[in-house]
Length: 145
Image (tube, rainbow, N blue to C red):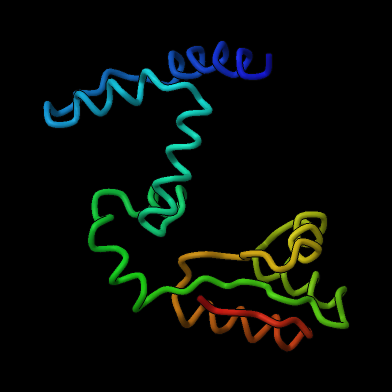
């Protein structure tokens, strides 16, 4: 029943947001196959592509056309900050996360409570190290990836 609701709602969303897009002939077959998929099939496809290529859907959207070159450059100049353990001073860590990521108190608390959790991805290495230092000073254990 929920699947039917999602499928019924999906065409409305596509109709509202779609503008005439010229699809190159080399991608027409692929686009037609994607258009024929259900929302659940698309979700599964995204997960498979994320695992296959080691990326996340949000990173792919940011990378755009340069996706082929991005993994090499990204490994050199960017880092992901993961909160691995909160430590003894949970309140200080929540405050540090709230301030560093410009989040509301509830969002920061949810991230800290969900540890281990990815705080921010694709940061410049210098910024990631600075964020990691702030969190470490607050008593948390952080991993840069």
